[in-house]
Length: 433
Image: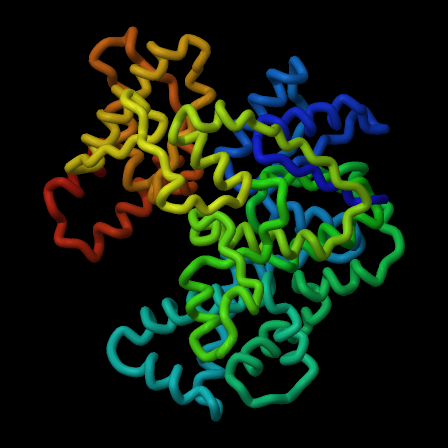
Protein backbone atom coordinates (compact mmCIF):
# COMPACT_ATOMS: atom_id res chain seq x y z
CA UNK A 1 0.00 0.00 0.00
CA UNK A 2 1.30 3.49 -0.77
CA UNK A 3 2.02 6.59 1.28
CA UNK A 4 0.07 9.64 0.09
CA UNK A 5 1.13 13.16 1.05
CA UNK A 6 -1.33 16.06 0.91
CA UNK A 7 0.18 19.56 1.22
CA UNK A 8 -1.51 22.93 1.65
CA UNK A 9 -0.98 26.23 3.41
CA UNK A 10 -4.62 26.33 4.54
CA UNK A 11 -5.95 24.01 7.22
CA UNK A 12 -9.43 24.23 5.70
CA UNK A 13 -8.11 22.83 2.41
CA UNK A 14 -6.55 19.88 4.23
CA UNK A 15 -9.85 19.23 6.02
CA UNK A 16 -11.63 19.27 2.64
CA UNK A 17 -9.15 16.70 1.36
CA UNK A 18 -9.67 14.49 4.40
CA UNK A 19 -13.45 14.72 3.98
CA UNK A 20 -13.16 13.68 0.31
CA UNK A 21 -11.04 10.73 1.37
CA UNK A 22 -13.53 9.66 4.04
CA UNK A 23 -16.40 9.73 1.53
CA UNK A 24 -14.83 6.57 0.14
CA UNK A 25 -16.11 4.00 2.66
CA UNK A 26 -13.96 1.38 4.33
CA UNK A 27 -14.57 -2.26 3.49
CA UNK A 28 -16.08 -2.94 6.90
CA UNK A 29 -18.89 -0.63 8.01
CA UNK A 30 -17.95 -1.31 11.64
CA UNK A 31 -14.29 -0.36 11.30
CA UNK A 32 -13.30 3.02 12.69
CA UNK A 33 -11.71 5.73 10.61
CA UNK A 34 -8.36 6.57 12.24
CA UNK A 35 -7.09 10.15 12.13
CA UNK A 36 -3.88 10.82 14.08
CA UNK A 37 -3.68 14.33 15.56
CA UNK A 38 -1.28 16.08 17.94
CA UNK A 39 -3.55 17.99 20.33
CA UNK A 40 -7.00 18.02 21.85
CA UNK A 41 -7.69 21.37 20.19
CA UNK A 42 -7.00 19.94 16.74
CA UNK A 43 -9.14 16.91 17.54
CA UNK A 44 -12.11 19.07 18.46
CA UNK A 45 -11.78 21.45 15.51
CA UNK A 46 -11.36 18.63 13.01
CA UNK A 47 -14.31 16.63 14.33
CA UNK A 48 -16.55 19.70 13.99
CA UNK A 49 -15.18 20.47 10.52
CA UNK A 50 -15.74 16.91 9.32
CA UNK A 51 -19.28 16.98 10.67
CA UNK A 52 -19.91 20.21 8.74
CA UNK A 53 -18.42 18.85 5.50
CA UNK A 54 -19.88 15.34 5.67
CA UNK A 55 -23.14 16.06 7.45
CA UNK A 56 -22.19 13.68 10.24
CA UNK A 57 -18.88 12.47 11.66
CA UNK A 58 -19.14 9.24 13.59
CA UNK A 59 -16.99 6.19 14.23
CA UNK A 60 -13.87 8.35 13.83
CA UNK A 61 -11.04 7.92 16.31
CA UNK A 62 -8.40 10.60 16.90
CA UNK A 63 -5.41 8.97 18.64
CA UNK A 64 -2.22 10.84 19.45
CA UNK A 65 1.03 9.62 17.81
CA UNK A 66 2.18 7.62 20.85
CA UNK A 67 -1.21 5.94 21.21
CA UNK A 68 -1.30 5.19 17.49
CA UNK A 69 2.14 3.55 17.71
CA UNK A 70 0.92 1.32 20.55
CA UNK A 71 -2.13 0.33 18.49
CA UNK A 72 0.05 -0.59 15.51
CA UNK A 73 2.43 -2.68 17.62
CA UNK A 74 -0.52 -4.38 19.31
CA UNK A 75 -2.04 -5.22 15.91
CA UNK A 76 1.27 -6.39 14.44
CA UNK A 77 2.19 -8.60 17.41
CA UNK A 78 -1.18 -9.78 18.81
CA UNK A 79 0.28 -12.89 20.48
CA UNK A 80 2.62 -10.89 22.71
CA UNK A 81 1.54 -9.44 26.01
CA UNK A 82 1.64 -5.64 26.00
CA UNK A 83 4.65 -4.26 27.87
CA UNK A 84 3.88 -0.96 29.60
CA UNK A 85 7.32 -0.79 31.20
CA UNK A 86 8.60 1.80 28.71
CA UNK A 87 5.64 4.16 28.88
CA UNK A 88 6.39 7.70 30.00
CA UNK A 89 4.51 7.43 33.30
CA UNK A 90 5.91 4.00 34.21
CA UNK A 91 9.59 4.28 33.26
CA UNK A 92 10.55 6.70 36.12
CA UNK A 93 9.42 4.18 38.73
CA UNK A 94 11.41 1.38 37.13
CA UNK A 95 14.51 3.61 37.11
CA UNK A 96 13.93 4.50 40.76
CA UNK A 97 13.60 0.80 41.69
CA UNK A 98 17.05 0.10 40.18
CA UNK A 99 18.88 2.84 42.12
CA UNK A 100 19.64 0.79 45.28
CA UNK A 101 21.47 -1.79 43.17
CA UNK A 102 23.03 0.53 40.57
CA UNK A 103 24.19 3.60 42.53
CA UNK A 104 27.02 1.76 44.41
CA UNK A 105 28.55 0.52 41.11
CA UNK A 106 31.72 2.02 39.58
CA UNK A 107 30.97 4.85 37.17
CA UNK A 108 28.01 6.10 39.19
CA UNK A 109 30.02 8.42 41.43
CA UNK A 110 28.44 11.69 40.22
CA UNK A 111 24.90 10.43 40.65
CA UNK A 112 25.77 8.85 44.00
CA UNK A 113 27.26 12.11 45.28
CA UNK A 114 24.17 14.00 44.15
CA UNK A 115 21.78 11.65 45.95
CA UNK A 116 23.69 11.54 49.26
CA UNK A 117 22.81 13.73 52.21
CA UNK A 118 19.48 15.10 53.32
CA UNK A 119 16.28 14.44 51.36
CA UNK A 120 17.88 11.45 49.62
CA UNK A 121 14.54 9.89 48.71
CA UNK A 122 13.32 13.12 47.11
CA UNK A 123 16.59 13.57 45.19
CA UNK A 124 16.43 10.00 43.84
CA UNK A 125 12.79 10.48 42.85
CA UNK A 126 13.57 13.68 40.92
CA UNK A 127 16.67 12.13 39.36
CA UNK A 128 14.71 9.08 38.22
CA UNK A 129 12.18 11.31 36.46
CA UNK A 130 14.91 13.28 34.69
CA UNK A 131 16.71 10.13 33.54
CA UNK A 132 13.46 8.52 32.37
CA UNK A 133 12.64 11.65 30.34
CA UNK A 134 16.06 11.46 28.65
CA UNK A 135 15.58 7.75 27.86
CA UNK A 136 12.13 8.54 26.46
CA UNK A 137 13.74 11.05 24.07
CA UNK A 138 16.41 8.47 23.16
CA UNK A 139 13.61 6.06 22.18
CA UNK A 140 12.00 8.67 19.95
CA UNK A 141 15.05 10.40 18.45
CA UNK A 142 18.15 8.20 18.97
CA UNK A 143 17.12 4.52 18.97
CA UNK A 144 20.46 3.60 17.40
CA UNK A 145 22.22 4.78 20.59
CA UNK A 146 20.11 2.40 22.68
CA UNK A 147 20.78 -0.45 20.26
CA UNK A 148 24.52 0.21 20.61
CA UNK A 149 24.29 0.05 24.39
CA UNK A 150 22.39 -3.22 24.24
CA UNK A 151 25.01 -4.90 22.04
CA UNK A 152 28.07 -3.60 23.94
CA UNK A 153 29.43 -4.00 27.47
CA UNK A 154 30.49 -0.40 28.01
CA UNK A 155 30.69 0.72 31.64
CA UNK A 156 28.99 4.09 31.07
CA UNK A 157 26.26 4.46 33.70
CA UNK A 158 23.57 5.22 31.11
CA UNK A 159 24.43 2.05 29.19
CA UNK A 160 24.43 -0.01 32.40
CA UNK A 161 21.07 1.38 33.42
CA UNK A 162 19.50 0.82 29.99
CA UNK A 163 20.71 -2.79 29.87
CA UNK A 164 19.14 -3.33 33.30
CA UNK A 165 15.87 -1.80 32.10
CA UNK A 166 15.65 -4.01 28.98
CA UNK A 167 16.77 -7.21 30.67
CA UNK A 168 14.09 -9.75 29.78
CA UNK A 169 12.32 -7.12 27.63
CA UNK A 170 14.91 -6.53 24.92
CA UNK A 171 12.49 -7.07 22.04
CA UNK A 172 9.51 -5.25 23.54
CA UNK A 173 10.50 -1.58 23.76
CA UNK A 174 9.26 0.72 20.94
CA UNK A 175 12.56 0.95 19.05
CA UNK A 176 12.94 -2.85 19.00
CA UNK A 177 9.30 -3.34 17.98
CA UNK A 178 9.84 -0.96 15.06
CA UNK A 179 12.85 -2.98 13.87
CA UNK A 180 10.81 -6.17 14.05
CA UNK A 181 7.91 -4.51 12.20
CA UNK A 182 10.26 -3.39 9.41
CA UNK A 183 11.33 -6.99 8.88
CA UNK A 184 7.76 -8.20 8.33
CA UNK A 185 6.16 -8.33 4.90
CA UNK A 186 2.53 -8.39 6.09
CA UNK A 187 0.52 -7.63 9.21
CA UNK A 188 -3.06 -8.94 8.96
CA UNK A 189 -4.29 -7.13 12.07
CA UNK A 190 -3.62 -3.64 10.71
CA UNK A 191 -6.41 -1.12 10.06
CA UNK A 192 -7.43 -0.51 6.47
CA UNK A 193 -6.63 3.22 6.33
CA UNK A 194 -4.86 5.77 8.51
CA UNK A 195 -4.67 9.56 8.14
CA UNK A 196 -2.15 11.77 9.94
CA UNK A 197 -3.54 15.28 10.05
CA UNK A 198 -1.98 18.68 10.70
CA UNK A 199 1.02 17.45 12.66
CA UNK A 200 3.84 20.00 12.62
CA UNK A 201 6.60 17.70 13.86
CA UNK A 202 7.19 14.03 14.62
CA UNK A 203 10.20 12.21 16.09
CA UNK A 204 12.06 9.96 13.63
CA UNK A 205 10.70 6.87 15.42
CA UNK A 206 7.13 7.71 14.42
CA UNK A 207 8.13 8.72 10.90
CA UNK A 208 9.84 5.37 10.40
CA UNK A 209 6.73 3.70 11.80
CA UNK A 210 4.57 5.54 9.23
CA UNK A 211 6.98 4.50 6.47
CA UNK A 212 6.75 0.85 7.53
CA UNK A 213 2.99 0.63 7.98
CA UNK A 214 2.52 2.23 4.55
CA UNK A 215 3.67 -1.10 3.13
CA UNK A 216 0.62 -2.78 4.68
CA UNK A 217 -2.14 -0.16 4.53
CA UNK A 218 -3.17 3.17 3.01
CA UNK A 219 -1.48 6.05 4.86
CA UNK A 220 -2.41 9.66 4.12
CA UNK A 221 -0.21 12.41 5.54
CA UNK A 222 -1.91 15.83 5.59
CA UNK A 223 0.80 18.47 6.00
CA UNK A 224 0.24 22.15 6.74
CA UNK A 225 3.03 23.97 4.88
CA UNK A 226 3.65 27.74 4.89
CA UNK A 227 4.74 27.79 1.24
CA UNK A 228 4.57 25.70 -1.92
CA UNK A 229 8.35 26.00 -2.32
CA UNK A 230 10.93 23.79 -0.67
CA UNK A 231 12.03 25.58 2.50
CA UNK A 232 14.00 22.85 4.27
CA UNK A 233 17.36 24.56 3.63
CA UNK A 234 16.65 28.15 4.64
CA UNK A 235 18.73 29.53 7.52
CA UNK A 236 18.08 32.38 9.92
CA UNK A 237 20.63 35.18 10.26
CA UNK A 238 21.86 33.75 13.55
CA UNK A 239 22.31 30.27 12.07
CA UNK A 240 24.23 31.72 9.12
CA UNK A 241 26.52 33.70 11.45
CA UNK A 242 27.18 30.53 13.44
CA UNK A 243 28.08 28.55 10.31
CA UNK A 244 30.31 31.32 8.92
CA UNK A 245 32.13 31.99 12.20
CA UNK A 246 35.09 29.69 11.52
CA UNK A 247 34.97 29.63 7.71
CA UNK A 248 36.49 31.76 5.00
CA UNK A 249 33.61 31.33 2.52
CA UNK A 250 30.74 33.78 2.25
CA UNK A 251 27.06 32.98 2.64
CA UNK A 252 26.64 33.20 -1.14
CA UNK A 253 29.48 30.74 -1.74
CA UNK A 254 27.93 28.29 0.74
CA UNK A 255 24.48 28.86 -0.79
CA UNK A 256 23.00 29.86 2.59
CA UNK A 257 19.56 31.25 1.94
CA UNK A 258 17.41 33.13 4.46
CA UNK A 259 14.18 33.13 2.47
CA UNK A 260 11.66 34.89 4.66
CA UNK A 261 13.40 35.96 7.91
CA UNK A 262 10.29 35.42 10.04
CA UNK A 263 9.86 31.87 8.77
CA UNK A 264 13.60 31.17 9.04
CA UNK A 265 13.80 32.26 12.68
CA UNK A 266 10.53 30.78 13.99
CA UNK A 267 10.10 27.75 11.73
CA UNK A 268 13.13 25.62 12.61
CA UNK A 269 11.09 22.67 13.91
CA UNK A 270 8.82 22.63 10.86
CA UNK A 271 11.81 23.06 8.55
CA UNK A 272 13.54 19.99 10.01
CA UNK A 273 10.28 18.04 9.77
CA UNK A 274 9.96 19.01 6.09
CA UNK A 275 13.40 17.55 5.38
CA UNK A 276 12.51 14.30 7.15
CA UNK A 277 9.26 13.99 5.20
CA UNK A 278 11.18 14.47 1.94
CA UNK A 279 13.14 11.29 2.75
CA UNK A 280 9.95 9.19 3.00
CA UNK A 281 9.59 9.04 -0.81
CA UNK A 282 5.76 9.04 -0.95
CA UNK A 283 3.82 7.28 -3.68
CA UNK A 284 1.82 10.40 -4.52
CA UNK A 285 1.82 14.09 -3.56
CA UNK A 286 -1.34 16.17 -3.80
CA UNK A 287 -0.94 19.93 -3.40
CA UNK A 288 -3.60 22.57 -2.84
CA UNK A 289 -1.91 25.96 -2.66
CA UNK A 290 -4.16 28.90 -3.33
CA UNK A 291 -2.36 31.61 -5.32
CA UNK A 292 -3.31 35.05 -4.08
CA UNK A 293 -3.66 38.15 -6.18
CA UNK A 294 -0.76 40.52 -5.51
CA UNK A 295 -3.10 43.48 -5.01
CA UNK A 296 -5.27 41.51 -2.60
CA UNK A 297 -2.18 40.54 -0.64
CA UNK A 298 -1.14 44.16 -0.34
CA UNK A 299 -4.37 45.42 1.21
CA UNK A 300 -3.71 44.40 4.83
CA UNK A 301 -0.47 44.05 6.72
CA UNK A 302 -1.42 40.49 7.72
CA UNK A 303 -1.94 39.54 4.06
CA UNK A 304 1.43 41.10 3.23
CA UNK A 305 3.16 39.05 5.92
CA UNK A 306 1.41 35.89 4.71
CA UNK A 307 2.31 36.62 1.07
CA UNK A 308 5.96 37.23 1.96
CA UNK A 309 6.13 33.93 3.85
CA UNK A 310 4.40 32.10 0.98
CA UNK A 311 6.85 33.54 -1.57
CA UNK A 312 9.87 33.18 0.78
CA UNK A 313 10.42 36.90 0.23
CA UNK A 314 12.68 39.15 2.30
CA UNK A 315 11.58 42.71 1.61
CA UNK A 316 14.29 45.35 1.43
CA UNK A 317 13.71 48.43 3.62
CA UNK A 318 12.75 50.53 0.61
CA UNK A 319 10.13 47.94 -0.41
CA UNK A 320 8.28 48.05 2.90
CA UNK A 321 4.96 49.85 2.83
CA UNK A 322 3.21 51.99 5.39
CA UNK A 323 0.38 50.49 7.41
CA UNK A 324 -2.90 51.90 6.16
CA UNK A 325 -5.07 53.84 8.61
CA UNK A 326 -7.67 51.59 10.17
CA UNK A 327 -5.71 48.40 9.38
CA UNK A 328 -6.26 46.18 12.44
CA UNK A 329 -5.33 42.85 10.82
CA UNK A 330 -2.38 42.58 13.25
CA UNK A 331 -2.77 44.13 16.71
CA UNK A 332 -0.58 44.33 19.80
CA UNK A 333 -2.22 45.06 23.17
CA UNK A 334 -0.18 45.77 26.29
CA UNK A 335 -2.05 44.68 29.43
CA UNK A 336 -1.09 44.73 33.08
CA UNK A 337 -2.17 41.17 33.88
CA UNK A 338 -3.88 37.99 32.63
CA UNK A 339 -7.34 39.14 33.70
CA UNK A 340 -7.03 42.34 31.72
CA UNK A 341 -5.68 40.39 28.73
CA UNK A 342 -8.82 38.22 28.70
CA UNK A 343 -11.10 41.25 29.11
CA UNK A 344 -9.49 42.97 26.12
CA UNK A 345 -9.69 39.73 24.12
CA UNK A 346 -13.40 39.42 24.94
CA UNK A 347 -14.09 42.98 23.79
CA UNK A 348 -12.07 42.54 20.59
CA UNK A 349 -13.93 39.34 19.72
CA UNK A 350 -17.28 41.07 20.22
CA UNK A 351 -16.09 43.81 17.88
CA UNK A 352 -15.07 41.22 15.26
CA UNK A 353 -18.47 39.50 15.46
CA UNK A 354 -20.13 42.90 15.01
CA UNK A 355 -18.07 43.80 11.94
CA UNK A 356 -18.01 40.31 10.39
CA UNK A 357 -21.50 38.72 10.55
CA UNK A 358 -20.29 35.50 8.92
CA UNK A 359 -17.73 34.90 11.69
CA UNK A 360 -18.72 32.32 14.30
CA UNK A 361 -17.08 31.29 17.62
CA UNK A 362 -15.98 27.98 16.10
CA UNK A 363 -13.75 29.96 13.70
CA UNK A 364 -11.75 31.49 16.58
CA UNK A 365 -8.58 29.94 18.00
CA UNK A 366 -6.91 31.58 21.00
CA UNK A 367 -3.39 30.32 21.69
CA UNK A 368 -1.43 30.95 24.90
CA UNK A 369 1.86 29.69 26.33
CA UNK A 370 0.40 28.18 29.54
CA UNK A 371 -3.28 27.29 29.41
CA UNK A 372 -3.38 26.17 33.05
CA UNK A 373 -2.38 29.58 34.40
CA UNK A 374 -4.97 31.31 32.21
CA UNK A 375 -7.84 28.85 32.77
CA UNK A 376 -9.31 30.56 35.90
CA UNK A 377 -9.30 33.96 34.15
CA UNK A 378 -10.92 32.46 31.04
CA UNK A 379 -13.70 31.04 33.21
CA UNK A 380 -14.11 34.37 35.02
CA UNK A 381 -14.31 36.54 31.86
CA UNK A 382 -15.97 34.26 29.30
CA UNK A 383 -17.96 32.10 31.71
CA UNK A 384 -19.65 34.93 33.60
CA UNK A 385 -20.44 37.81 31.20
CA UNK A 386 -22.20 40.87 32.54
CA UNK A 387 -24.86 40.50 29.85
CA UNK A 388 -25.94 37.02 28.71
CA UNK A 389 -26.57 38.41 25.23
CA UNK A 390 -22.81 39.03 24.98
CA UNK A 391 -21.80 35.51 26.05
CA UNK A 392 -19.27 33.83 23.75
CA UNK A 393 -19.34 30.01 23.85
CA UNK A 394 -15.91 28.54 24.49
CA UNK A 395 -14.00 25.42 25.45
CA UNK A 396 -10.52 25.09 26.97
CA UNK A 397 -8.41 22.42 25.28
CA UNK A 398 -5.11 20.73 26.12
CA UNK A 399 -5.56 20.86 29.89
CA UNK A 400 -4.04 18.22 32.15
CA UNK A 401 -6.14 15.37 33.54
CA UNK A 402 -5.79 16.91 37.01
CA UNK A 403 -7.26 20.22 35.87
CA UNK A 404 -10.21 18.52 34.17
CA UNK A 405 -11.05 16.23 37.12
CA UNK A 406 -12.16 18.10 40.22
CA UNK A 407 -12.02 15.01 42.45
CA UNK A 408 -8.44 14.18 41.45
CA UNK A 409 -7.39 17.82 41.83
CA UNK A 410 -8.91 18.00 45.33
CA UNK A 411 -7.22 14.76 46.40
CA UNK A 412 -3.81 15.98 45.19
CA UNK A 413 -4.32 19.32 46.91
CA UNK A 414 -4.93 17.46 50.18
CA UNK A 415 -1.57 15.76 49.73
CA UNK A 416 0.09 19.10 48.92
CA UNK A 417 -1.43 20.62 52.05
CA UNK A 418 0.60 18.27 54.25
CA UNK A 419 3.87 20.01 53.44
CA UNK A 420 2.42 23.52 53.22
CA UNK A 421 1.91 26.37 55.72
CA UNK A 422 -1.84 25.71 55.96
CA UNK A 423 -2.81 29.12 54.63
CA UNK A 424 -6.45 30.12 55.00
CA UNK A 425 -6.94 30.37 51.24
CA UNK A 426 -5.65 26.82 50.64
CA UNK A 427 -7.85 25.34 53.37
CA UNK A 428 -10.94 27.25 52.25
CA UNK A 429 -10.34 26.16 48.65
CA UNK A 430 -10.47 22.55 49.81
CA UNK A 431 -13.69 23.17 51.74
CA UNK A 432 -15.22 24.75 48.63
CA UNK A 433 -14.52 21.52 46.76
